[in-house]
Length: 43
Image 1: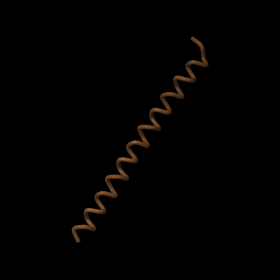
Image 2 (image 1 turned 45 degrees about the horizontal axis):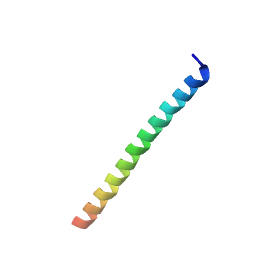
Image 3 (image 1 turned 60 degrees about the horizontal axis):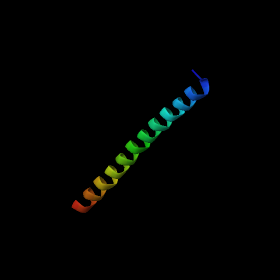
Image 4 (image 1 turned 60 degrees about the vertical axis):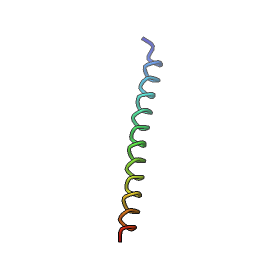
């Protein structure tokens, strides 16, 4: 097995996990903003 291709596979996996992390963060941020807006609106 070529070591270079293995390195590329690893990089793809790292990219995927960082993308998942960003996606989760983005969702949390959006949820927080919506929640704060709702709380402010209810006051």
